[in-house]
Length: 310
Image (cartoon, rainbow, N blue to C red):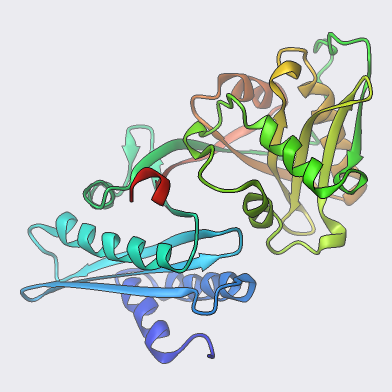
């Protein structure tokens, strides 16, 4: 089946009809990229709810990594009970996208210092039974992040070593990543919702397998954590995930790991790195601040999952 079909294309444009045309075009291109990487036979789902002369529509995409992303929702004309009408549409979208086999549905709302900008959508997500997973702070660093003079070295006498994830069997790599999620401060509500294999497949979207910048972190000969970087462009990259097993936390390994990130950026010709972190993850926020990361935006992540009764 070709994508976009006329119906899907018109639907996506309709949902962005109150925005400049460039936003609708960008949304359609984003959907195309997700569909190209999707393993699902019919990854785009549509939902519509009508009440009198008001119509609410939305779309979602089932993506690689067993995750479904909600696209934009729109109600025309404006309705007195618009959040409820949109909420019914969100409920239908979640039902349809979960039926494709994804493990998690996610929606992102832009937020300011006071909370989400689109309060009507927040009410719609709430009425649909979605859960607010976290407020995520997005940061960037345009300097190569090396340890500042005077930063403490690791308490361990054993220097850390980073090895390609391919140096251990796949199942051991998955076990290591999963162990780093234990008692995590970064969106802990997600633990147990998505399988580790599907999470890693999501991290790998758009990256050639032979170019994956994934490492296991070792100290004293034992694996203690993992580092996952993603190349976004010739200039930009993302610190996608940095995790340590519980026994390795508090030993000041992270500055050494960030030095490794900086060296990799130099080797790859990168000059900018971005990341997102849970606003409640104080140790991570302190680490990134000490390496010169500057705040960009804040977003709210909302989720639905069968494991939460949705």
